[in-house]
Length: 349
Image (cartoon, rainbow, N blue to C red; front, side):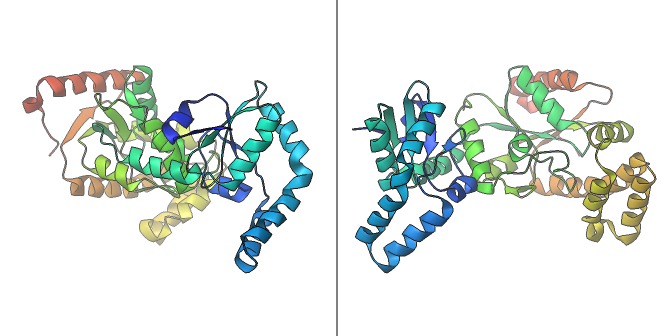
């Protein structure tokens, strides 16, 4: 009999994770690191489900056996390719027949198999629980182009705890945020990725999180985490406008101009027709700096409005001329000063 483990122990157990749900279920969301190892194709799963509803459980099981039977040898062969040590972890949606059937097959073929109790559904309950765990957050704020992402990386390299939501979402958090990056995960998968990071962070040390709106591209920040972020103090890095434009040129200077124009057009309702057209013409003429300056006016107003309505302490730090690494050192020194002399903190007016 395979070993059945609850999620916390399952995640620590050895072996590749085989997700035996359908490809569509896997695509919607899966345990990070798990391999899609479907017992049924999307079409087969739908066919078995329809049979269950129309004819009953026994008929659905017989249909499932008929569909799976010819694939048994291929399952074993593929599992051997994925797990040379013959140690695997298996799960389906609820920890029922699909994972049980695959566990039986692989054990018969000589594998050491662990099954996830309550399946992926149980994992999702665990995700919600983990995301609700409180941790001390420090929000890294700053207007568009201040280099927050690079600074966050610099903080991590110096041993600080960080949570990089834009990295996990494959998006920089603006109309231009998806340019040059891989496709975004679903919101469900975004939550899974965050939970796997969040559970590793100590509750006894601050966690740096970049200031984000509720949406990072198409990914929604989990409400449990977003509530904590909204209540956290903001350490706001401030750079000169010219330096911000230079940093944004570094991010987007090599992007296809037509993609930049498309992203700019998405802002037409907010920028206004005249300013949008001027920005588009600047891109067409190769004057990306001029286009960035126009768009920054909009993003600066949006950021300022969001900042004012948060109602939390804001601590501005001037970092013009400083590298991301030097800025990270500056932030850590300020954090330590906050911890030592909290009454000496001065909020931005």
